[in-house]
Length: 88
Length: 231
Image 1 (spheres, one colour):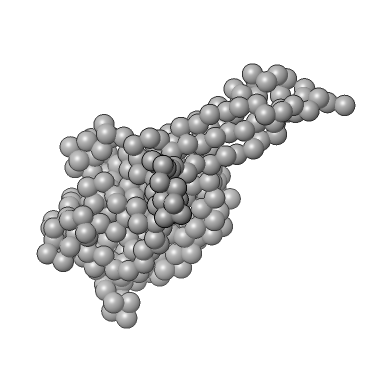
Image 2 (cartoon, chains in turn cyan, purple):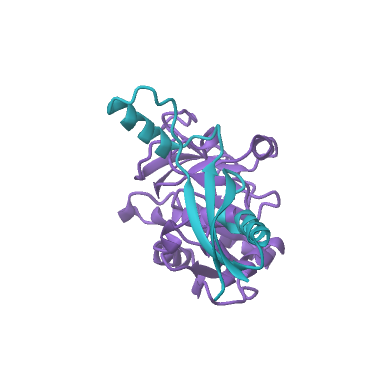
């Protein structure tokens, strides 16, 4: 077993109104960032997980997203391994 | 009418709901989210508030509470379940009602009375009203924008699951009367079987003249009537 460090990105589904993103978009425009066409805000969960392998950790994270971390009606998710700590 | 008022860490409309149940002659009991067993109750109600600080998503963490397993069993057996505001969010997260409640399109927390139109009076929650009745009931939420995938939305409308809609004072479901951006001005809906109702407005806050409206009482009266008819 080693500890796998995961980054789980929970993203608002495209096409759905994302009022936080819209507010940020407007603020960026008013700061002079004219080239910004869109902004959407999601969430990132950093998870440290004991697992036999990276693929086991990713599989577990996917299950967590389907059941709890992401709302299947409004959100998509992506999981990446960002580090690994071997057991002493 | 024995009613379980289920409370979570962060529920804050639990006492209002308790009082509303008492007002129609019901017998409410607070059931803490760690408790189990709901079979002795005639109805189960999930109050508004900010369970678990709305962390992750409104209702997402409360939905994992031990008592929720019993709420799901209770609802699937046909028991009446009412979820108000955060309670509605919890019911959606638990899969007892379709869709999700997203951030208000205005990004503002909206707290004021709204006009609601009664779309159905053939449910156990609304028999005391007439179809088309206009009610004045307060809302108080930041995440009440009802959304679902296209197929689900079509099914909800096609099968007539919408119970309350946000309307203007003349009864029209206009965009200006929509406080949060909900699809088709949906303020409350029932499941297919009709025994689970979720709504963002607070009927328990419209139960005394002192509060500015008594239009919410009909909902609790309807339940008393429905339950005494089956008893």
